[in-house]
Length: 449
Image (cartoon, rainbow, N blue to C red):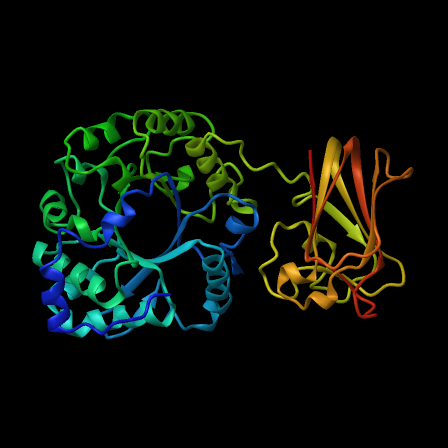
């Protein structure tokens, strides 16, 4: 993480003298980003972790945590609670784990709730230090300035200058205008984005342009083309923001059909296409709330011309097993698609005969298994399963052993097999740990075609 440099008048003066040659130019070579906005941290009281975006190899490049508000009473809130509220403890840990694996984590500031940017504009010395403190405290990689209220050009430039002076050349600064604001049209922000790009473009890494809610559409490439043909905003600095679910606003474009075609066309037209952002994570199609990370995997595959991540056939299927360590660590935890929900986000069984059985619902062709053991969930690797077998069955009665492991120490193991038809899968744990501890700890049991 970058060393925080306290803003001083001298630093700002030096910055102003080097605007044409400093940092964001290094970012201009980057393109084809997969960006996800992450605002709904809890759904019906249950924590929604962003970490499956990493665990499921979606190719995610940036997570934008939304939304930070600088309130008139002096408080700072991430949505409805202070960032330090205990409800966010696991979230910050998950985001740090993603950063450690190369995912950029930025804070979206502002949005539809008014006041934050008015205060930064008119009471900068009071409110900017509060923003700076959040960035420093949570070791964020950047900010996304979503200005959806009147703000002066002088005010937004002052915020950008201060961020660059305080956090250095590697700090990511993005803005989130509606798409027409980059095409000479409508605008929610008050200031002129054309002039901002001319004055501070070297300090702005990219724009997450909103192509929805009636402002523009990604049903084809026209609205994006209108921005690029003006010659002011290069493709690598224009990330096309799309809705991930029709309930979020008007203008949803289906990710598996129309949006796929649009993205592939944009990549062909613009080899340095800036990428795609999704608003927002928790309910993203096609997986919905059960598998919201699938959207990001598809977006990455469309941009890179790769095959989407394979589907986990066991995900959220009916699971049974031997007696659990407690009621919170039942068999369903081993097929819920998550290893980041804490130490209880696993199937745990201390029984003398430890087993987990999954019903795929119908006969499927299975070609490999992945088992995520204790270390994958953050526990000591001494609890990783040492010896186990994996069996398949078409009728739930007659079983064929496909995998036998006797001396495992790894936290994640992958087991390819000759493709076999199976409706039922069974994991049998014979030696549950490296230490003699009797409890099996299985964070995820996955099957793939």
